[in-house]
Length: 129
Image (cartoon, rainbow, N blue to C red):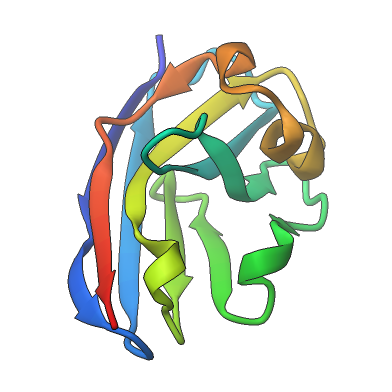
């Protein structure tokens, strides 16, 4: 069973930056995708950015393109989400997530959250105006 431990998050003013980290362990398959989903009040969790272990191009949701960068340290099984130029609408709880056995980053980010196999504990990100 995959275990995910998140760190980072916090409160920042609009225009500021934050970095989320996700340490993963317990993979049972070499092929997997790790991503970040965001949950806001009244909405389902939605994929923000995802990255594949197989070298597929990272995927970014339109509203974060050019501002967020996802990266992976495969040797340490860690994934990071660098969030720059933050906006109040970026506020939410960010969850690290994993699906094993797929290679497309976009497939995971477009997936309904019920299709995600493993979740981190969530990290609150608050951007004040």
